[in-house]
Length: 243
Image (cartoon, rainbow, N blue to C red; front, side):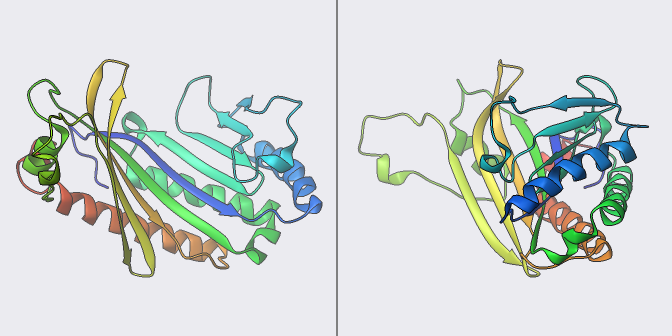
């Protein structure tokens, strides 16, 4: 997505997952973690262990175990776990070209230190999280969604009951260009005091074998798809408010 001056963006995540099917895969992860850090530490020198030592690795497949940052609390960051590697950043640090180039750099490193990954069926995903503030005391979540997004939702089935909408959580899944695009709208908070709607736009790739070049092409395509979806969903006064 383009860098809008008043973008509602919270976080961007590019992740790759693969199945862990044997003890050998767990052993491989130990080498992968060390080799990855060796290649990234010039930029991401701050290493965090997210897993208590008593928890065995084989029960947290697909979850991050180590996190690499430039310094404590900074972004972007790289996460790695058994069957997982991701690059995460936030709005202040997000520019698409930089994020793409950093992702491609990590893919090149992964190809050098762990070429075995291209033999696995991989699941790439690109996620954008956006936050839209609204006055919960003056309008319901549906009021806000219907007046700002290119969506039309109602709860007429509740009109004969003595009730007031508390929150929403809607997910729409579409198959586009051999990818699944998942749009989720739900109530959320940031900074513990701002009520609003969180939009998660997640593009999920087909589970199959990918080499580094194919993953780079997939990421570019997923970004274009996410960007177009966001522009279409927020078209009108809401999108104009981001400029």
